[in-house]
Image 1 (cartoon, rainbow, N blue to C red):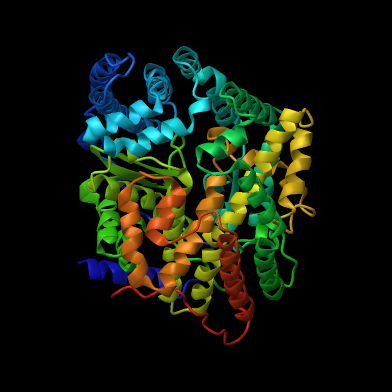
Image 2: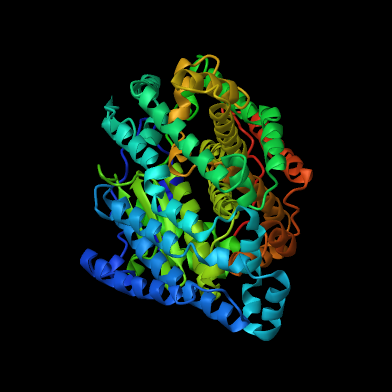
Length: 635
């Protein structure tokens, strides 16, 4: 049955397709079985919080100077129990809030996190109070502590920035009022903007929720109207959006200074085990090499000019070639597609990903067409004691949707592999750029697989362009956002950035390093308002810089020697985060995280792939099939 299903999906994907815009395919939803894996009902979850309260009370019994290895071991065991229970509640509330953003679970999640953080604030100061010599004697006296060596070293790594318990508990309890309200305001502002819809022959499409479909519409007037409606809507609330962002920055800088950091970017980079000065220098170097992203835009512009006899505008970047419409994939065809695409990553990884999209497992929440109050993006959750679950708010069948599922499913499969390997809750979380690198690599593998199995030259080129546009250049697109955000923090701290006009000017300046369009497209001055992570998870975008660079390095190793790479890569995924990221990468894959060669090697790969696109014009009568780097999985 799987073979027949896969062949059917291939027929849908690779058959000749009409040039007109397509209606999203009718698909059934995938629903996460929250009662099976979490709690039977909202009231059951509330009742079960008594177990979390009991675990916190048990941990509080260790709220005293730690005088022995056994006492430290038991304290950490009690803390692990708290983590397991908290993550169960947090994951459940996160999923419910994402299904309906007006659900009381949204506020409950914020409060629960603040309460647990405050109740556990005593732990780090207690561990830091142990003299180093005494701690070493604890390891000798209690061998079971050795498994927690890095977790303890991680706490002590941040020693000078850990606040006394009373101060940290106070900050944790007031976190929603200090630094969480700004994103709530941002969401409310966006919800209140009447972006509207654009009329197409297939019916109206939402400017926001169906942005991907509109961007790839064959009608240039549709693409332009969608683009301008979006930015015009944002411009109408630019002052309040700027107010929210600037107060996000002020709050984060204040919190950083409270922890004895000079500013929020320094705090963020240091907590990622990155040298802040080296990270700033890397962002500057990537801006200096931003021509690699401009080169891709120029290739698209050349092809667009040849096809349409018009110069390409910013809203034409995803325009299809005349006579070709990007394929749309029914959701039920996706599991077989991923099964084949990830076969080359080994049976263990393939099985972990397959399990996510098996409807019988109830581990995916994917809704074709989305819903008004549903979060439209994607994420995954997973931790020790509960299977990982994949969430995607709106599925329209585009390649971008497939790529998002490959990415977020990559996070979920990674968490599954750690859980199956018995990774401690202490080591189930680590620097997010490593998480992102694994997920971005999935997207590169998927795009290359589809290109390799496309019989139509136009479709093959389409997927090779998607390889570049969606994730090949992700490190540079991440650098554009991360550099913009860093300079916003610098400007607010210096008092030179005070409102929307200043944000507009800075955005055009930074974006001009990476794109050919800002100087000729006035609407793009408001792009800062579209970078939602600056509000939702401040300074997260730098993870896409390092994650994108690493994913390209994985891709080079994978395509040059898959037999050598795959088992070592799988071992890294299963291992968890029991060492600094640079050590893990060196140990498992012999990658030097901080070496200048990482960026240099990636630039060589990107420029080679760009040269292939330049040589293979879609407008020639007999376009040459570009070489495929990826190894072919078994059929």
